[in-house]
Image (cartoon, rainbow, N blue to C red; front, side, top):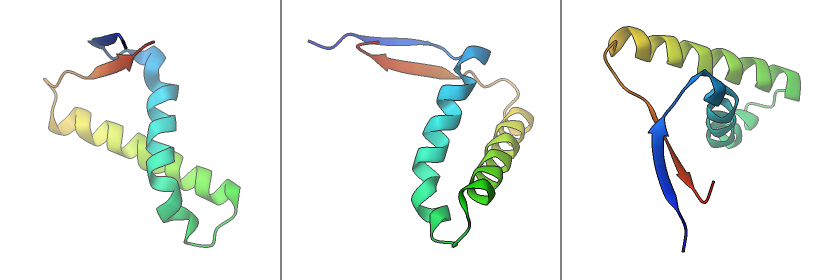
Amino acid sequence: MSEIVVRAADEGDEQFLRHVYFSTRLPEVAAFGWDDTQICAFLDMQFRVRQQSYKIQYPAAEYFIVEISG
């Protein structure tokens, strides 16, 4: 049986969250016809702006990571 753990997100999770964001947006952005460098730069900018926007719009928000079997 899988162990499910819910824990507060911290700064050490940024790479994981960036990976999740990139993986969900990559098919859409790849259709633009850009090379890998352009795609990564665009997705990185979008990720950073989204993170900043959420912090401004929801200053009291709490962020969590759901881990399944580690």
